[in-house]
Length: 216
Image (cartoon, rainbow, N blue to C red; front, side, top):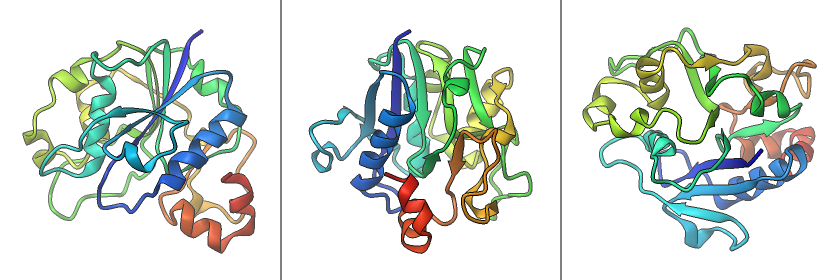
């Protein structure tokens, strides 16, 4: 099976640095079978030459996370089974279960059922797009049918994904614990990917010695 692992690194309101991409690539090299690692970015000049890049730009007038709709652009050279990972994650368990999840399109489940945007935009409480697995070529409508007005009505890309493809699979919630809910490295045996929404990885690495040992 051909495996492509991808991430998105673009200018936005979250101050990610090239270190996030480099460390994610390193974690993937340890945790995953042979694969191509590729970063969708508007800042390839900041990344090491060892990282394959695809040039993209965040949509004008929208949060940078909407760039993720471009993952489903059928013109992109993504092949085989594709695994997308947010930059603010830790890989802590068996990733094979995610790669081989028996669905052509699968997302992490929504993990913030009580969140509601203060600006009145809509949330579709189905998926979290921090981790996505799909067969290349699946769901091109997520890109083709996207229009800027969606970013004015919906909070984020995951809401669009949930609205347009409610039939997609949601992977088990216990695979994706949140760092904010953990007391040290206490994830359960079912955990695969820790989602580091608060604090972000760079801050957590300074605060928790154990974190920096995993985020390498």
